[in-house]
Image 1 (cartoon, rainbow, N blue to C red):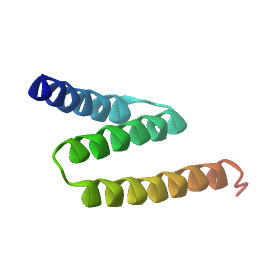
Image 2: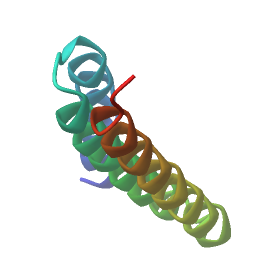
Image 3: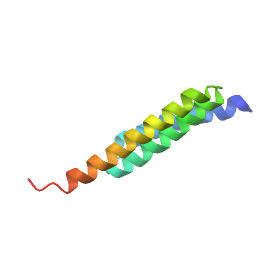
Image 4: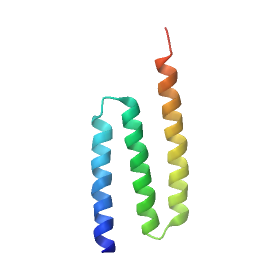
Length: 79
């Protein structure tokens, strides 16, 4: 059962990666990237690496925050 859940998570990570790349909406892509980061952190936790999982989630959260901030700043730019 544990292996099957892990394999489903790996397939979900591949699908989320493809959907995030193909999405035309930037905010939608960032949301899909955040879901990918969450699934990746969960997979690392299942592999008994909680310190690496926590680091991945923290770095992913910071990057996602920077992406959203940058997208909003570029939308407001009148050049």
